[in-house]
Length: 86
Image (cartoon, rainbow, N blue to C red; front, side):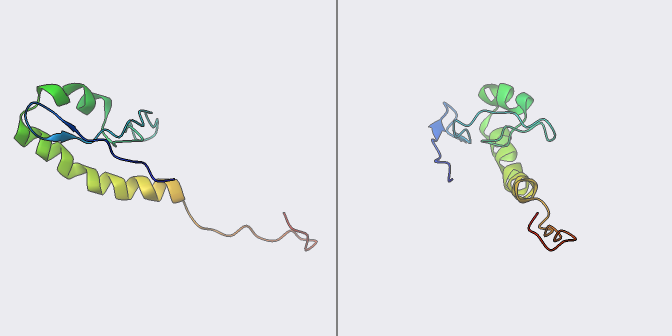
């Protein structure tokens, strides 16, 4: 499923990366939608444009890591000893 992005232009002019999928991932501490931490989400409204841009620059690397977590290792399941499907 592909998430649609809803960009919200903040008063400073840098759009929020929020896509309205607001669920925190326990292992990473990132929102599953925008990949920001709670602290980053909470401070967004107080940041100036350069700080927002710096935060946004971190997200592509997080997305790569996130996608790797979602796909996980692709180790095939070994067949059962009797040859039957597991």
